[in-house]
Amino acid sequence: MLKNIFIVFCKMKKLVVLLFVVAGFVSIAQDPHFSQVYTSSMYLNPALTGALNGWVSNAQYRNQWPRIKGYRTVNLGVQKGLDSNKLGFGITILNDNAGNSIYTTALGANAAKRWDLGDDVELGLGIGSQFYQKSVDYTSLTFGDMIDNKLGFISDSTSKDNISIINFVNFSVGIDLKIFNGNVGFTTSNLFEPNESFTGTTSKLPRRYTIYGKYEFNFAENWFITPLVKYENQASFDQVLIGGSTRYKFALLFIGIRREDAVILGAGVNFERIRFNYSFDVTTSGIDHNATGGSHEIGLIFRFGGGEAGYDKMHYSF
Image (cartoon, rainbow, N blue to C red; front, side, top):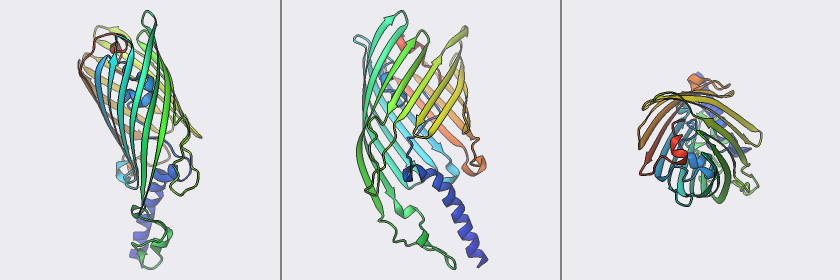
């Protein structure tokens, strides 16, 4: 009997934490987020598409709360900037796994246009479209009829079918203003708030508003410091990230604080055509850091070509 109670307790502990992972899909859904803000620039703002001249590819992987199988997110992108007419085009792939239960895949296409407003001042507008497929694997979840007060957990449930799948189209728009060695921008994602309910009812994905900015200061030869701030709002969810990076020659260090959530520590190397970053989130919210294991994030940017015009001078922050 005590053994069964202990098994139920351990299962329930994992289940309670898993509720934090899937709660967004039960009530108010939230989009995936990254600690390395500029690695996936097209995810941050479609207006940044093609801001780096030539071909640019990026890959970003985030493993959030690995000890409880929280979120695992991959974002891939390829973009092309045309300096002659200030146009940019790109494609993106996003894959998100929440608790080995809820899966999201999004295929996207971005386009942007930039205008010179003066010396080292540039305005960009962009739009992005995405085709989403989301699914829930109910066999990996635990329901009330799977708990027996004598036997503990049993494997069968009559609560749901095994898997539910939904598809929808999503849009985002953004504006970005480059001023000398800095930029500020504003993005609206989930523009038309698509319905992502698995049950046939209405469950809209709320609009996500993002405001960000950074500026790169050159303190000495080969030494740069770049403060950064980002604010996001999605329904009742607010998030503020304040941080900064310092680069000496090819070495990069950065630190950030996401309010009431995490402290971000990271390092990277930045060469002419390749940039690699690693960061770790130390959980500071009400969820125990030791229970979650924090979050790991890897970012890679590879440039195939392009000169030193426009945004090319300011791609060193995280």
